[in-house]
Amino acid sequence: MAKMTEHSIGIDVSKSHLDVFHLETQTAKRFENCAQGFRALRKWLSPLAVTRVVFEATGPYHRAFEKAFSGHLPLVKVNPLQARRFAQACGTRAKTDAVDARLLARMGSALALVPDEPMSAKLHDLRDLQIARTALTKERTRLRNRGHVQTNAVLKRQTKARLALVERQVAELNDEIAQRIAEDRSSARKRDILCSIPGLGNIVAAAILAFMPEIGTLDRKQAGSLAGLVPHCRESGQWKGKSFISGGRKPLRDALYMPALVAMRFNPDLKKKYLQLREAGKPAKVALVALMRKLIETANALIKADRMWVDKTPCA
Image 1 (cartoon, one colour):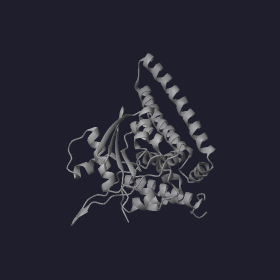
Image 2: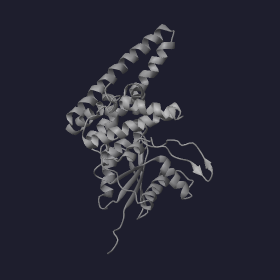
Image 3: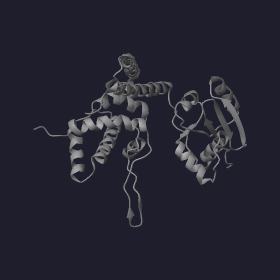
Image 4: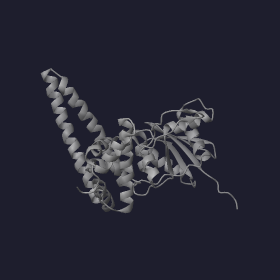
């Protein structure tokens, strides 16, 4: 049986342009990173049975591209560090947009990267709202800290006015996010299950739904790994280094930090686990990361089973 021809496409996404490379024909093209450029790219790719389109996560620049083509092209989003290490393994030192597009196409073909599950427009919107909310809460913290140390009356008044505006915008986003989740029956059910876990509330539940849409379909290890909460061992011969966590989805990890602190005090099951780890000699931060991992694994298991949290601690 003849092997089907692969069409591996690499796209380097920048603020203004999309540098595209078609591996099989060794063809390079450049398109504008805008709606008109997206239409031109779609037209150029339409004759091909594209196997995969590999691109890097580049913060705000890739999101419009991803939203426009999700469900229409087999997209593969890769970590920039992973792509750079592939380039180093290939012996490539040059770094230009065109070179990056070529390497992404090669990486997709060499590693036989599997396309990601397409994200719905609703999920894209929910994630954008959540990202905007995170930015506003950071700005709110900066303004509060600045207001505490300012002595000039004019500056204090301006800071107070900006803080009031940010507070209103955060509240508006909270309402919009809650409404988007409530409008979708599946998301609303998942939110209710998440909020039944002591330590998790509506805001954290929304962050989990936005940044881990796969929740409820993963196994235990996958859930912890996607959040970047699985420790990586470092051993060689007789040498044994400290384990560490890395990678994963940072916004999700950030969202789990405060709930873990709350659970450490008020969730009986997780409080017991935390104390056991501390008594075993684990540092406080290591024990806290273990609670963060336990929270997301528990959330994944409950959503998979479609049931609410039940306190296992026996009544006195």
